[in-house]
Each structure stands twice: as structure tokens, then as C-alpha cells.
Image: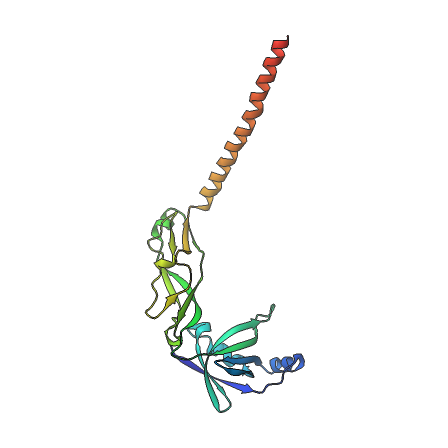
Length: 222
């Protein structure tokens, strides 16, 4: 995995007022931590940070963070966003080493054409969108793929159906469903309606039987 260089300012002022001023200047407050290093308050350019994570690796992009005269290999973690504007408001940078195995999550992309499901007017539902893995920083893949070309209606694909690169260890349950082929929604609605009618007929039949008993008892009394 390639690395992206990013310059961070150390010794940023803390506090809500100082934080608002940083953001108004187009900067993001953050914290650098890990491997016995005392947490360092930093600030980075918002635009530069967005560009750094815009590549194929996304959040798993290795960032060579330059802080003063020091340089740290990091990953962006615990990214906080504004609830309305969706802009990044704070970032934690985790220091990593090239030879250590770390935890990460990578996106799952569907590939292929589900011919059988399409011919049956079925619906493909992706139920799992990320995969939890463990790997060395340079071995973390940008994403993994699940091939849905052989999917049929009523069948599902699981984590075990996903091929992961060498050096990557799965943390997600191997039996977890990733993609499911559902029957047509109209057919499902029709089946539910039919079940409702059958249930209603059963309910109607019960009072009828009770009524006949009542009539017989009346006739007997007469």
C-alpha cells in the first residue's frame, strides 16, 4: 500500500474557542498517539486531509505524518464529523509500525451479474458492507470483492465465499451472510396476502362450527 505525506502542526491550542478558530481557518484539530508516545495535540489542513484519504485505500491510507522535525507512520482513526454538515471536526492519528499486525475494516464490493436472480425478477440484498481483518499496514487491501454471478433466489453468500489476499486474517464470523437472493417483492406480497386469506378462512370456520352446535341444541330443546 502506498503512503501519503501529510504535514501537521504541533502544539495547537485546546479549548472550544481555539477549536472553533482552527476550523474557521480550514484546519482540523487532532491527536497523535500510540506506541508509548505521549498524546500530541495537532492540527492539519482540512483540504489536505480530504485529498489524502480520497485514494483507493480510503480510511486505511497509510499517512506519513510530519510533525515538526519528527515523522510518524499513522492511520486515521476515530474520525468525528459534524452531524449536519458532515465535515470532519476531529481526527485521532494512530501510530503504527510496518511489521506489526493491526485491526482494520475494509469495504466489500459486489461484482458480477446475478443472472438467475434477475431472470426470476428477484432482489439482491447486500447485508454485510465491511469486513473486519487483521494484517500488517502495508498488507491491508483497499477492499474485497464478492462474486454474485452464481447467486440464485433463496440462496446466500457468506464471508467464507470471499477471497482475501495473503497476509490477511479474517476477524468477521465466517458464516455471516454477505449477500442474499430474495424472491420478487410482488410475489412475496402475494404470498403474504394468500396466507392472510387462509388465516381469515380458518377464523371464520370456527364460529360456524360453534353456531351449528348451538342450532342443534336449540332443535333438541324443541
